[in-house]
Image (tube, rainbow, N blue to C red; front, side, top):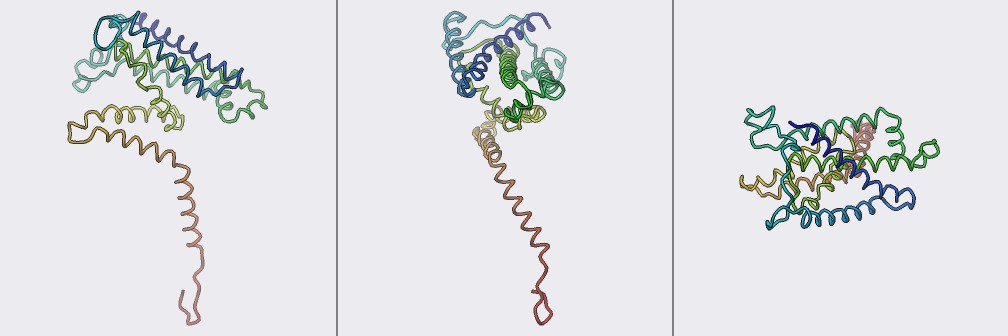
Length: 269
């Protein structure tokens, strides 16, 4: 497998993602514009820009759906069924490959950064309470900007892995597939835990993508979406469910400690 060309492509994608996400981060610091609103607007701008590039200057042919040329084999992140697991039948139809290992490495680096470095500590303190961090001498503006740069670089990495390792070309509609919002949902349901994300992301992908094959087993393909909806619903109700269960346990404990009232005839009430 070639290493130089894929590494350069991934580095370029991460650099572009970091630079592009720096803009809403800078707006957040200087103008106090909500980063959720600004990133949604900048995402829409990026989607339109990529759509124009695919349909006009980078279009490869006159196919009904606009698409770019297929990437060269020198930039291909080879799947496992073409490499170390070529003889394993379980990987025969899978597109899982080197990009999965890169994602695991990125997750470890992010965990190490957040848990084992001074900058990561500043990041966590700023997220917990920006006012407390500011009084503690932590530069909250710099930490917020650093978070935007890292998130943009990770987004670029995810896009590079998807194109170089799975799609091998950019097809019109890929930029508006909503994968980014799926990532936000996975992060929220995983409580922003690196280990939780690594465990929940394959489960979510299996429900989301594997549901299309359920219709061949006399099951509706909407079943995956229904399960995901219930997961989101119960996750949003977590505090309510915890409070109700806590109230029930306290009530049960109080009833268990209440002494029995003895009647005049000597029997317990």
